[in-house]
Length: 228
Ligand code: CA
Image (tube, rainbow, N blue to C red):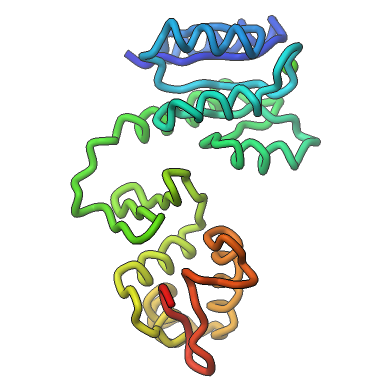
């Protein structure tokens, strides 16, 4: 049984989502306000995933997400964002959401995202050998995810491959050529600069202060190293 909480104050949208998710095999729990959602979660600790609207009459969806995450890291959370509010996506992910769906969305899209999230939430019984753990980071090589202090960091496939290479070689200086060959393949004809561009992006995602990197350090005139 897959159980989903739907937090949406607009009744039309809510019942539309509910009908479609029930059709897709979900047991649904509904809430029209942020506080109601938090109450329903307490009554239903077996909820796997939540769909949170942002604009609500009481506390907003970000705050609901934050409060859920304060006690529950495991539940999957999808934010419903408006097309025009690009910042919503960033804020949503910062508050601990796993994914977002932009309004207007198709029921098929929402169901697909939720199904993927349920699979992820339930794929928790990961063998230890699939986890690489260093400092605050845990890399899961089965579902290709990275966490820092238990919070998911969203990576592109290339960024993931770079982090994996680093974490498999802690403290070892890796040349830019070596990184390029390992991540992009020996046949890749592109410039070495692409390594630097990806490192810069990774530092923004991983470092406490991207200007003073401590996880991905520079080896001048050579390449990069995981750790100092
Ligand atoms: Ca709303």
